[in-house]
Image (cartoon, rainbow, N blue to C red; front, side, top):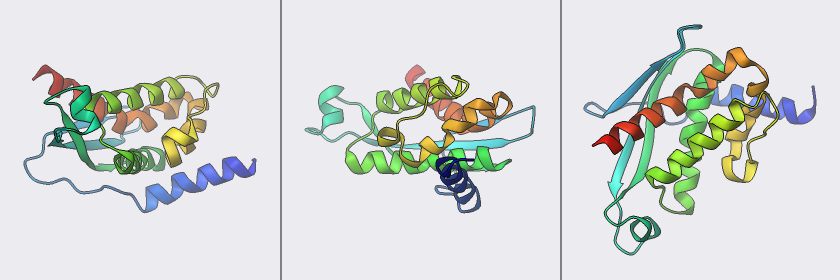
Length: 165
């Protein structure tokens, strides 16, 4: 195993043991996803705030909201739990750089899905995905891709429901 693979493995273990973003609040709109093959479960909530006039999100889509945070609860393997934690970390880091719109989050989800379906031929860009790039290697193990995708599918479900109004 290369030193990079070892580092990625350590990031996944750290996030599964010390997850970020755990804890849902009563009344939040959530999406519950379950992997029937292994029993992993994730319940995820996206928190939104109104875009402020004059910021990049408001300029791009007047009246749109921006992502204020992500929270989750779940149980399962270290990959599913780490992936949820890494999604939270990615959103937090992205928010530090500027507002995250629904379209921004949707693009992240699509890039993540493309890498996960690549069977190891596409690596997540570490500049864009930060520590979540550690999940790139999961794509080589088809049976584990659903584990890594659970939180991302939950986020996608919430975005779709939000768009439907």
